[in-house]
Length: 484
Image (cartoon, rainbow, N blue to C red; front, top):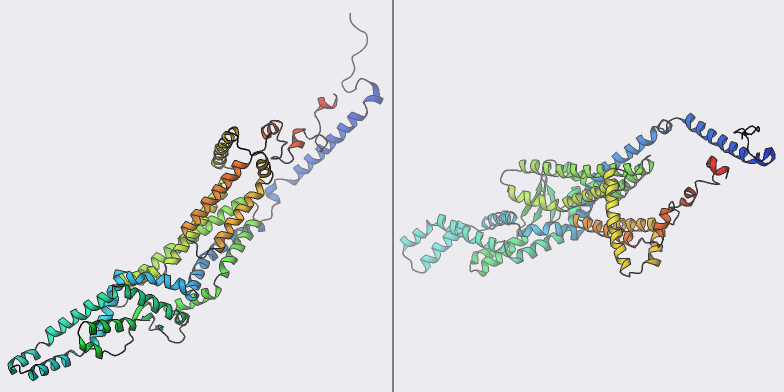
């Protein structure tokens, strides 16, 4: 049976004007607020248009400057250590004592010096006179006088074999190390071109006095029965460590870097940090800063190889190229080690900045690691491992624990004297293990239920508001909910 009463209009609520006025007014207020926010966002335009171009430009310039300063910082630390750190300098030159090329060069240099102090003609004349005194026939004595050539050759072989025996013995290692340790105080004068000393800078050469080795050979010859060697005076002969026509400019640059010393690395790090802080996307800026430092270390490594080739090509005549190459490699050995260490650290930093990013590969890597560690943790908890109290603590302070791990690793690397590539690698390994342990201990009982309810647990700050649909937080409720 049809009713004569017309159906209520959609705009009106049952219950009259007095009972239904308040809910529509509240909804209209919320809708007006939403319209106002949408209009404000539309009027603001794209977010990138509002950014000032000076901020990204300043970030790029600071990162480029930090990359260039990192190259100079590595060279400055090396130059400063060579000049001021005696143990470092001795550790640099000590391996040269056992280098075959250097031993051969020293043997030739000392042999030439010893033979120059022995008058072969006088020795032959003395031998002839002694023969005459012993009643040797004059013909035989005259024959002995014509043996200066064979005697000179035999004497050279005797001296050379004696020098070679001394240079290849442990005694030479001791003499070499002690001599370099004793003369290290004069190295600063050598690099600045002031004064003399056992280390000198003359004729564009850095030379070390190997006179003590000549004295040692003299004693060995006398002990072997060659009495004329006792007349060899105390001599000072130089073994050239480094020679170059541009050594005047090199010593000036090294002096400047030596003055900067250990301050330049700190300045480079601070400038890089400022560039990352100024960037709009700091993670991406950190990635490119690490790439810039790695590129700087690669450039420095290539420059060392090129400079070595140029240096060997310009050696004076008579200088052993093999020995000069060995000396060059020894002097820059720790510089190359620093280049590899800083390059490895920069590469690891770049990889870390990429892994924490939003790319598909990064997300997949983090997901696989998290699920793998989570599976191991679930097995351990099922077996009876108590993680409730510790798990809640780690879950609550997880971010700060990660910060502490990174800060401790940074302090270790910055306070380590001359870190090598292996120091960097082991530090990275320990950091990864520490983060894995943190993930393993991140266990909050009931966390899965919280996640199912919208992430309102401890691990999702603010998730409770999102789970409630934003009620009471300025977000409008669904129309059907308002009428319930």
